[in-house]
Amino acid sequence: MLVDELEERLYAVSLSDDGTSQFDELCAELITENAGLEAVDVIIDFLEWNDDRSLCCGGGFSAKIPLMHFAERFSGQGYEQLLIASVERMPRLLTIHMLDRAIRREHDGALRAALIETLEQAALSFVASDFVRECAARFLAGFARSARRIGIRALMVKDQRPEIRE
Image 1: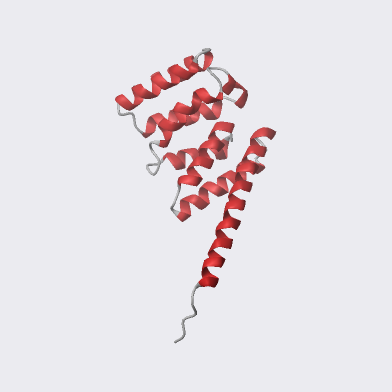
Image 2 (image 1 turned 180 degrees about the horizontal axis):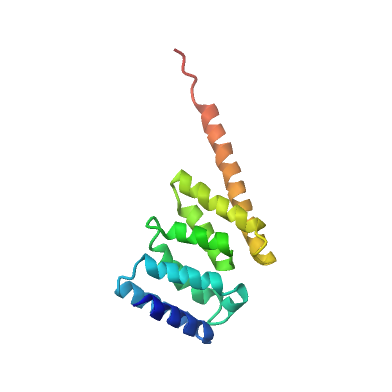
């Protein structure tokens, strides 16, 4: 499927009342056609430039989940960089949710730090809606709680190690 055709299909589905099955079918087609990272770029652009209220059209927020899952198939192949660039330009509810999922999945320290930094920027972004900034802040608070728990466990394990004398 060509980029122009994908853009047209995304736009058409976003105007419909039944986006859920249509987005599912579209993603199945993309998988069958072995669509690559260029399709992910178009999808992320679509999510970025359709404001959060328009996510209620075309089947609502949950209808866009197949698009998220399709894009996540390219994790480690450039997906994260496309997502970071999009959130830096225009944080949206679904793209910060995708960012949160990418952070939780990422094991590479440098990329994870870049993803978290992008989420921090989204929480302070003047172009994001109040709701998006609040959601980004909540995701960050969740990471802070997790980090404290991990840190406490690490200290407990460290304190339980026998002392080694040379």
